[in-house]
Image 1 (cartoon, rainbow, N blue to C red):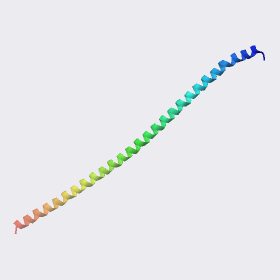
Image 2 (cartoon, helix red, strand yellow):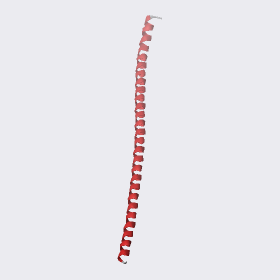
Image 3 (cartoon, rainbow, N blue to C red):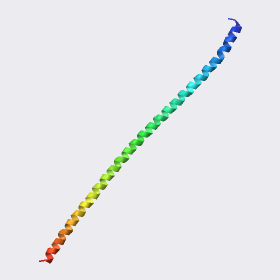
Image 4 (cartoon, one colour):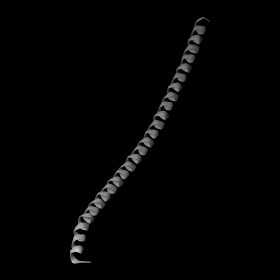
Length: 100
């Protein structure tokens, strides 16, 4: 090949090589951006999973507290019933004693 042909060929290929480097840089940037987004999505998924687990734990605690309050209230009401029975029995006994 003649030197002028080589120079002409080099001048034609130089912009194409530069263009390929720019395209490769754009592609690399795109991939890095997608990887960062995927990592952020994983973080969001993990945070949501942890929040759901925490909500489940809180719900179980709340249900246990409700059940405990119910049992306490029922025990108190049972005690009031027994007291009412005892008061009534005492009043009946007082009436019987007065009438004898």
